[in-house]
Image 1 (cartoon, rainbow, N blue to C red):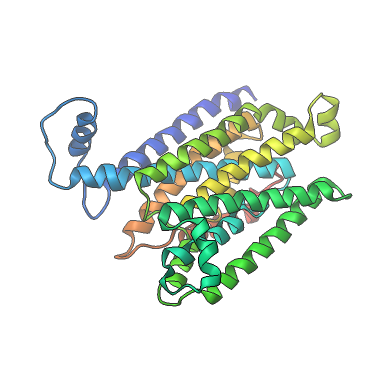
Image 2 (cartoon, rainbow, N blue to C red):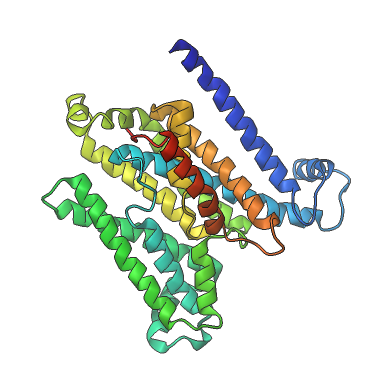
Length: 357
């Protein structure tokens, strides 16, 4: 056991090195390549006055396109992986993913509704008024997705609180019900959307992408991701007790109802903010927690930071493949499914996908 405990810092060091390499390499890679020397000079120019030592356009590529996109990929990957490991521990089920309570489908519905206005010249009047309230433009779409993602989980939680059955089961069933309703709403919006502009925009957004990321989107992400991650890490030792079962946790003085509500709130904040910016990206919150449990055990004091670091590295690398593999750009949701599904199948066949508790 002592040898295993000594191995954890080394594994964290390796994971940190992989993250740093992915972060650095992603800023350099692209159709407009940036050399390490140019990147160093560009970063130095933001700290002190220095002679320009880079090509025309390099500054705009790095600070307006590459850095925001890489930072967004890191934040979204960390948020989805941390939310996934938290949900799996709370529900004591390794098959749980961050969208179990309807955050992703609610966000998808909100985004689709807002897109009706963004390309709204042909939108019928009965949809126009509602779309105006939800905002126009990319930031309006993100805000609409974020709000509806939170509302979906709030609805699922409210229904479960009114149920007389086991609250955990009621919460999962309520989440399935809310997800179904919002999925139906999104399908109806796609049905009435204009096929020339609105429908392609909705379809592409639902597949997930970071191609439209701007610096303000990173600022939008930083606050909810920080608010969601920090309490989860602080409460990680209490989550260890919750995995023993509610009765055992209560006997040790843990307010399980308050703890469950806090974990759900933080994980939902992480999921909704991520989906609001990137669209629907699956498998990150389902697969990454299993790898982290294999490498770092079941202690949530290690699992949550490890999942955040692993998820950030994973999504940065997948986003690199998305933008460099073909002449066009492959939606992230498609790539994560192509990568995540075989990995998850391997984990099942080799016994890696064990109980979340």
